[in-house]
Image (cartoon, rainbow, N blue to C red; front, side):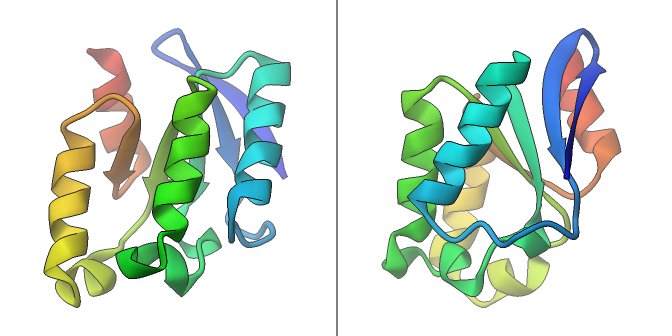
Length: 120
């Protein structure tokens, strides 16, 4: 289940934690389609909705998913605690740090961080 919310006047599609897994490009395109239909500029997906492959950069799953969002001009927020994944991979830690410095993909721990990011 998803819902459209406005956070600091930014339309955001927020996905429920108990939805289907986001495993590849097809799942990403479905979310992007929903976002486009509702006019959302960002899609927020709880971290637990992503399979382990997403957090193992060598699989390229994250790259393919993020690329789809970028192609359609929709931002992606991975929301939740991913510290176990980051602790296991310095490459992922670098990817998260670099992504959080941009305007396409953010890894955030909670809704408060999201609100702070969208405020500015």
